[in-house]
Image (cartoon, rainbow, N blue to C red; front, side, top):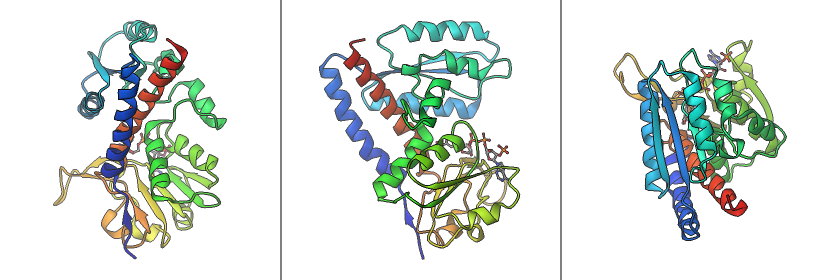
Length: 290
Ligand code: NDP
């Protein structure tokens, strides 16, 4: 079996065209969706992610702004900026790029963002709403993964779904969304005793680990749908310097029924759903008249 390749670039383009139309309709009523991205420090990967987010906003016709701070900035200064943005009616979404330097309490920073502007969906109140099955904002990466299932007509009800990874930004919200969609969900992590036992019975396998080509063909049930969230830069070997996912794509695509590539899979969908959440926030603000 050779898997269907779930093309994140194509799906992102389709969704972004719809977002652009909605943004134009909103602009005609006097509201331009606005996103501010706050970057603390000089982490190279974070700088690339932030640049891509701001560029995607501009392309979609949104207002966007990057606010950068040096790595030793005082958390109080960042909190004051967040308070100012919370009160600014032109700004509908506020995103603080993670990870933050060690002297920051990340949860305190995320919880300072007004929940109705928390387009990453990481505020405790929004995580709670997601748990209850009444999400205000769905975290962008798992939201993008759900769009793959929806677009490809992959049914989730009654399926065995296995998520490898339990981070707050990917693994846990991913598991919650699959659960709400009717799948039977297992979450695996570094202390899972028999990972193979779990992965081999997964109809839906989501890898969010951060280890290059960790998921091998032997770990995958024939016909499974495999979603690769990982983004890793290979350090050695003939492909050194190249990006790869958490899944051994070439081997696993011969076993799976559908698979996302890296690059060109989940990555473009994450930024797309950030646009979607920002647009949604702006539409809600316009409705409220704020
Ligand atoms: P984290 O490092 O926060 O979480 C990794 C998870 O993998 C942890 O829960 C960890 O377990 C688990 N894990 C590590 N080693 C093993 C192992 N040997 N067996 C089973 N589980 C293991 O990473 P993130 O969730 O933030 O990101 C995961 C990957 O996704 C990264 O490559 C990241 O770059 C990528 N990413 C991609 C995005 C995109 O847009 N495509 C967006 C966000 C992330 P434990 O909890 O026990 O430590």
